[in-house]
Image (cartoon, rainbow, N blue to C red; front, side, top):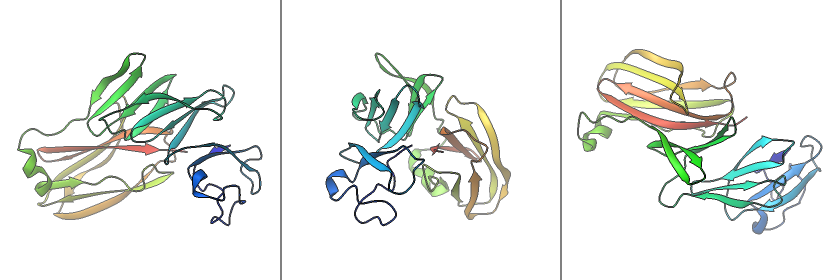
Length: 222
């Protein structure tokens, strides 16, 4: 079992005092006893918080990523090397599907290949009105928490009553589920998304509010 959340620090009474200083606050920890208290061992330390994803427990391959960098380890997290550094892009999600690597930004989903990222899907945005008018009409908020497991809250605001459609898509643009399709009064609205039946990964949340379309990327981690 590997974890980068609730690291065994001195100020965390739930786990042993493995990490006594801030230098190992952002650490990758390993447990060989299903995460039982007292069994966590510090494996590696990062400069900032990261999220991790394992491809195959038998291969030792682990990915660590944040908003700027994707790193890979082939020895169960003991050593990491940079797989991709995003530069000006801000990474909002990362997933491994059938051995292929994908990451998302606020506008595109990219497939990570040997020569660099290749855009495979552009998240639709409305071009029917000037962008400066868009926030005053509607607003689809980022889900919270994100990443989530297994429940997250989705909120949106509309300035005038109208038809609202919110759908969930896979990272490849395939429709997974229609979450809302109904007439809503003006104001703030929210609802829960339950991810128990979904696989871990990055999804696209797309809201259509009359002539406006807005999308968010959301991440489910189990």
